[in-house]
Image (cartoon, rainbow, N blue to C red; front, side, top):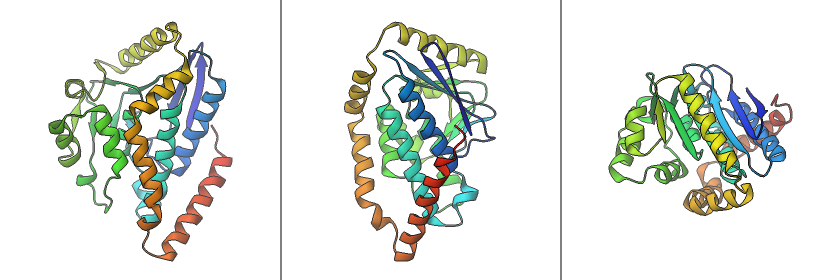
Length: 258
Protein backbone atom coordinates (compact mmCIF):
# COMPACT_ATOMS: atom_id res chain seq x y z
CA UNK A 1 0.00 0.00 0.00
CA UNK A 2 2.46 2.64 1.20
CA UNK A 3 5.77 2.87 3.00
CA UNK A 4 7.32 5.48 5.26
CA UNK A 5 10.97 6.18 5.97
CA UNK A 6 12.70 9.01 7.75
CA UNK A 7 16.00 10.67 6.95
CA UNK A 8 16.95 13.32 9.45
CA UNK A 9 13.87 15.50 9.85
CA UNK A 10 12.40 14.54 6.48
CA UNK A 11 9.69 11.86 6.17
CA UNK A 12 9.24 10.08 2.83
CA UNK A 13 5.76 8.59 2.25
CA UNK A 14 5.71 6.43 -0.88
CA UNK A 15 2.71 4.88 -2.66
CA UNK A 16 3.58 1.47 -4.08
CA UNK A 17 0.59 -0.24 -5.72
CA UNK A 18 0.22 0.01 -9.51
CA UNK A 19 -1.88 3.06 -10.45
CA UNK A 20 -2.38 4.00 -6.78
CA UNK A 21 -6.16 4.04 -7.21
CA UNK A 22 -7.78 5.37 -4.06
CA UNK A 23 -9.97 2.97 -2.11
CA UNK A 24 -10.60 2.58 1.64
CA UNK A 25 -7.70 0.15 2.03
CA UNK A 26 -5.09 2.49 0.53
CA UNK A 27 -6.58 5.62 2.10
CA UNK A 28 -6.64 4.02 5.56
CA UNK A 29 -3.04 2.95 5.04
CA UNK A 30 -2.10 6.56 4.19
CA UNK A 31 -4.03 7.91 7.16
CA UNK A 32 -2.40 5.42 9.53
CA UNK A 33 1.01 6.43 8.19
CA UNK A 34 0.24 10.12 8.69
CA UNK A 35 -0.62 9.33 12.32
CA UNK A 36 2.81 7.74 12.72
CA UNK A 37 4.46 10.77 11.13
CA UNK A 38 2.58 13.06 13.53
CA UNK A 39 3.76 11.02 16.51
CA UNK A 40 7.40 11.04 15.37
CA UNK A 41 7.51 14.69 14.29
CA UNK A 42 10.20 16.93 15.72
CA UNK A 43 10.22 20.72 16.05
CA UNK A 44 11.07 21.18 12.38
CA UNK A 45 9.97 18.26 10.18
CA UNK A 46 8.84 17.97 6.55
CA UNK A 47 6.77 15.34 4.72
CA UNK A 48 7.48 14.36 1.10
CA UNK A 49 4.87 12.21 -0.69
CA UNK A 50 5.98 10.25 -3.75
CA UNK A 51 4.63 7.42 -5.90
CA UNK A 52 6.30 4.83 -8.11
CA UNK A 53 5.23 4.21 -11.70
CA UNK A 54 3.21 5.90 -14.43
CA UNK A 55 0.65 7.41 -12.04
CA UNK A 56 0.96 9.54 -8.93
CA UNK A 57 -2.65 8.46 -8.43
CA UNK A 58 -5.28 7.52 -11.01
CA UNK A 59 -8.09 8.71 -8.75
CA UNK A 60 -10.82 6.66 -7.15
CA UNK A 61 -10.84 2.89 -7.53
CA UNK A 62 -13.74 2.87 -9.99
CA UNK A 63 -13.78 -0.92 -10.36
CA UNK A 64 -14.38 -1.23 -6.62
CA UNK A 65 -16.80 1.66 -6.26
CA UNK A 66 -19.09 1.54 -9.28
CA UNK A 67 -21.02 -1.53 -8.12
CA UNK A 68 -22.69 0.52 -5.38
CA UNK A 69 -23.09 4.29 -5.19
CA UNK A 70 -22.64 4.13 -1.42
CA UNK A 71 -19.05 3.10 -2.04
CA UNK A 72 -18.34 6.46 -3.70
CA UNK A 73 -19.60 8.13 -0.53
CA UNK A 74 -17.29 5.95 1.54
CA UNK A 75 -14.25 6.79 -0.61
CA UNK A 76 -15.17 10.49 -0.47
CA UNK A 77 -15.27 10.24 3.31
CA UNK A 78 -11.95 8.38 3.43
CA UNK A 79 -10.14 10.85 1.17
CA UNK A 80 -11.60 13.82 3.03
CA UNK A 81 -10.26 12.31 6.25
CA UNK A 82 -6.77 11.96 4.73
CA UNK A 83 -6.83 15.54 3.44
CA UNK A 84 -7.96 16.73 6.87
CA UNK A 85 -4.93 14.94 8.35
CA UNK A 86 -2.66 16.71 5.87
CA UNK A 87 -4.17 20.10 6.70
CA UNK A 88 -3.60 19.59 10.43
CA UNK A 89 -0.18 17.90 10.12
CA UNK A 90 2.39 19.95 12.10
CA UNK A 91 4.92 20.32 9.27
CA UNK A 92 5.17 21.48 5.64
CA UNK A 93 4.09 18.87 3.08
CA UNK A 94 5.46 18.36 -0.44
CA UNK A 95 3.87 16.26 -3.21
CA UNK A 96 6.31 14.94 -5.82
CA UNK A 97 4.17 14.31 -8.92
CA UNK A 98 6.24 12.15 -11.24
CA UNK A 99 3.26 10.41 -12.84
CA UNK A 100 -0.23 11.36 -13.95
CA UNK A 101 -2.55 12.68 -11.23
CA UNK A 102 -6.20 12.38 -12.19
CA UNK A 103 -9.54 13.13 -10.54
CA UNK A 104 -9.23 12.42 -6.80
CA UNK A 105 -5.50 11.82 -7.21
CA UNK A 106 -5.29 15.41 -8.46
CA UNK A 107 -6.99 16.56 -5.26
CA UNK A 108 -4.69 14.43 -3.09
CA UNK A 109 -1.66 16.08 -4.70
CA UNK A 110 -3.06 19.60 -4.37
CA UNK A 111 -3.75 19.01 -0.67
CA UNK A 112 -0.02 19.33 0.00
CA UNK A 113 1.58 22.71 0.69
CA UNK A 114 3.98 22.39 -2.23
CA UNK A 115 3.54 20.46 -5.48
CA UNK A 116 6.58 19.70 -7.63
CA UNK A 117 5.96 18.02 -10.97
CA UNK A 118 7.98 16.21 -13.59
CA UNK A 119 7.47 17.54 -17.15
CA UNK A 120 8.28 14.16 -18.71
CA UNK A 121 4.84 13.55 -20.32
CA UNK A 122 2.87 13.84 -17.05
CA UNK A 123 -0.58 15.45 -16.79
CA UNK A 124 -2.91 16.74 -14.12
CA UNK A 125 -6.55 16.30 -15.04
CA UNK A 126 -10.05 16.15 -13.60
CA UNK A 127 -11.53 13.57 -15.97
CA UNK A 128 -14.93 12.80 -14.42
CA UNK A 129 -16.48 14.08 -17.66
CA UNK A 130 -14.55 11.53 -19.72
CA UNK A 131 -15.34 8.35 -17.79
CA UNK A 132 -18.67 6.57 -17.60
CA UNK A 133 -19.65 7.14 -13.99
CA UNK A 134 -22.58 8.97 -12.45
CA UNK A 135 -20.68 10.85 -9.76
CA UNK A 136 -20.62 14.63 -9.37
CA UNK A 137 -17.44 15.96 -7.76
CA UNK A 138 -17.88 17.00 -4.12
CA UNK A 139 -17.92 20.70 -3.21
CA UNK A 140 -14.78 20.25 -1.13
CA UNK A 141 -12.87 19.16 -4.26
CA UNK A 142 -13.67 22.52 -5.82
CA UNK A 143 -12.66 24.29 -2.60
CA UNK A 144 -9.25 22.58 -2.67
CA UNK A 145 -8.71 23.58 -6.31
CA UNK A 146 -9.84 27.13 -5.59
CA UNK A 147 -7.39 27.36 -2.68
CA UNK A 148 -4.55 26.56 -5.10
CA UNK A 149 -5.73 28.30 -8.26
CA UNK A 150 -8.29 31.02 -7.55
CA UNK A 151 -8.38 32.30 -11.14
CA UNK A 152 -11.88 31.88 -12.64
CA UNK A 153 -10.65 31.09 -16.15
CA UNK A 154 -8.27 28.43 -14.85
CA UNK A 155 -11.00 26.95 -12.66
CA UNK A 156 -13.24 26.64 -15.72
CA UNK A 157 -10.53 24.77 -17.62
CA UNK A 158 -9.88 22.40 -14.73
CA UNK A 159 -13.39 21.71 -13.43
CA UNK A 160 -15.81 22.33 -16.32
CA UNK A 161 -13.64 21.36 -19.27
CA UNK A 162 -11.54 18.65 -17.58
CA UNK A 163 -8.47 19.85 -19.45
CA UNK A 164 -5.27 17.86 -19.25
CA UNK A 165 -2.67 20.23 -17.81
CA UNK A 166 1.05 19.74 -18.44
CA UNK A 167 3.66 20.55 -15.81
CA UNK A 168 4.71 23.79 -17.54
CA UNK A 169 1.11 24.97 -17.89
CA UNK A 170 0.38 23.96 -14.28
CA UNK A 171 3.21 26.25 -13.15
CA UNK A 172 1.84 29.12 -15.27
CA UNK A 173 -1.63 28.65 -13.78
CA UNK A 174 -0.24 28.48 -10.24
CA UNK A 175 -1.41 24.89 -9.69
CA UNK A 176 2.08 23.53 -9.01
CA UNK A 177 5.14 25.28 -7.64
CA UNK A 178 7.77 24.07 -10.10
CA UNK A 179 8.33 21.74 -13.08
CA UNK A 180 11.42 19.62 -13.67
CA UNK A 181 12.81 17.72 -16.64
CA UNK A 182 12.90 14.24 -15.11
CA UNK A 183 11.75 12.12 -12.19
CA UNK A 184 15.21 12.29 -10.64
CA UNK A 185 15.38 16.09 -10.88
CA UNK A 186 11.90 16.43 -9.41
CA UNK A 187 12.78 14.28 -6.41
CA UNK A 188 16.09 16.12 -5.98
CA UNK A 189 14.31 19.49 -6.01
CA UNK A 190 11.82 18.25 -3.41
CA UNK A 191 14.58 17.06 -1.09
CA UNK A 192 16.40 20.39 -1.47
CA UNK A 193 13.19 22.30 -0.70
CA UNK A 194 12.55 20.08 2.33
CA UNK A 195 16.11 20.67 3.54
CA UNK A 196 15.68 24.43 3.27
CA UNK A 197 12.41 24.24 5.23
CA UNK A 198 14.05 22.12 7.94
CA UNK A 199 16.88 24.65 8.26
CA UNK A 200 14.35 27.41 8.92
CA UNK A 201 13.36 25.66 12.12
CA UNK A 202 9.64 26.21 11.64
CA UNK A 203 7.35 25.61 14.59
CA UNK A 204 5.18 22.79 13.26
CA UNK A 205 2.18 23.44 15.49
CA UNK A 206 2.07 27.13 14.53
CA UNK A 207 2.56 26.19 10.88
CA UNK A 208 -0.44 23.83 11.03
CA UNK A 209 -2.65 26.43 12.72
CA UNK A 210 -1.75 29.02 10.08
CA UNK A 211 -2.51 26.49 7.34
CA UNK A 212 -5.93 25.80 8.87
CA UNK A 213 -6.66 29.54 8.89
CA UNK A 214 -5.60 29.83 5.24
CA UNK A 215 -7.74 26.84 4.25
CA UNK A 216 -10.70 27.71 6.43
CA UNK A 217 -13.11 27.56 3.48
CA UNK A 218 -11.92 24.03 2.65
CA UNK A 219 -12.48 22.94 6.25
CA UNK A 220 -15.90 24.60 6.08
CA UNK A 221 -16.91 22.38 3.15
CA UNK A 222 -15.78 19.34 5.17
CA UNK A 223 -18.17 20.37 7.92
CA UNK A 224 -21.00 21.08 5.46
CA UNK A 225 -20.50 17.65 3.92
CA UNK A 226 -20.68 15.98 7.32
CA UNK A 227 -23.86 17.84 8.22
CA UNK A 228 -25.47 16.94 4.90
CA UNK A 229 -24.24 13.37 4.66
CA UNK A 230 -27.50 11.57 5.58
CA UNK A 231 -29.33 13.27 2.70
CA UNK A 232 -26.80 11.85 0.24
CA UNK A 233 -28.46 8.42 0.53
CA UNK A 234 -32.09 8.23 -0.43
CA UNK A 235 -33.15 5.06 1.37
CA UNK A 236 -32.69 3.40 4.71
CA UNK A 237 -31.20 0.44 2.85
CA UNK A 238 -28.57 2.72 1.35
CA UNK A 239 -27.75 4.11 4.77
CA UNK A 240 -27.36 0.58 6.12
CA UNK A 241 -24.96 -0.26 3.29
CA UNK A 242 -22.89 2.84 4.08
CA UNK A 243 -22.74 1.99 7.77
CA UNK A 244 -21.62 -1.55 6.93
CA UNK A 245 -18.94 -0.21 4.58
CA UNK A 246 -17.72 2.22 7.24
CA UNK A 247 -17.48 -0.67 9.72
CA UNK A 248 -15.46 -2.62 7.15
CA UNK A 249 -13.21 0.44 6.73
CA UNK A 250 -12.46 0.45 10.46
CA UNK A 251 -11.64 -3.27 10.41
CA UNK A 252 -9.34 -2.83 7.40
CA UNK A 253 -7.50 0.02 9.13
CA UNK A 254 -6.73 -2.25 12.07
CA UNK A 255 -4.79 -4.56 9.75
CA UNK A 256 -3.16 -1.88 7.57
CA UNK A 257 0.43 -2.82 6.69
CA UNK A 258 1.68 0.77 7.08
